[in-house]
Length: 217
Image 1 (cartoon, helix red, strand yellow):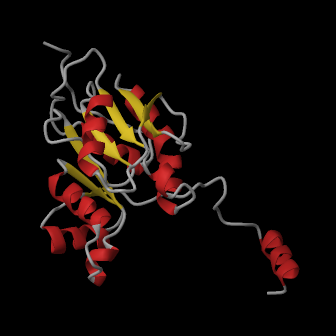
Image 2 (cartoon, rainbow, N blue to C red):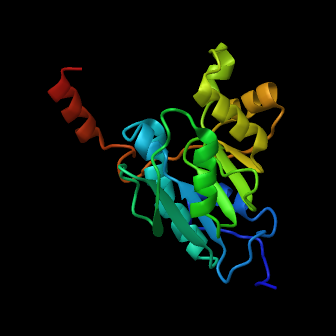
């Protein structure tokens, strides 16, 4: 047997990290180890390294790491070769995301590299193979292709499979949650994107007037 599995809480984590933590703890980890492991595929840092999703995960990963450590879980980031994922927790190398969309081979490689993980989370829509024993948690930002009826190419097919097969889904807004229910019949927990309060906060009137003067507003 392994250690007793208790509900996880993260009072000092961001809302998104706390919701991811609750999703992780929704059931006992199927892979027993001294310290259960959560593996996060940093594929977003390969595909669109300067995009909004990569920026969200840049902020989320260190908070998730702290939250997991506080309850004696571990975090490992699967860094795609040639990318620059945040060096948080344990870092393991993973082959680049296949631009030829050989998703089956990619899934097998994920399963091999994260074979000791209890939970898998992708920064986009990758997932382990069907034989991998663990829970899959998915953070969904939007359903733009589904809402506008874009043609289903290989990548959006990968997304569809990820949404359908995820054990737990976290959505960043009520609108995304509603779209998940409409297009996939899936419900989610909602964790809205936060802001850095050291950057975004109410300014003094003098600062406002100075900005207006410099920008001729």
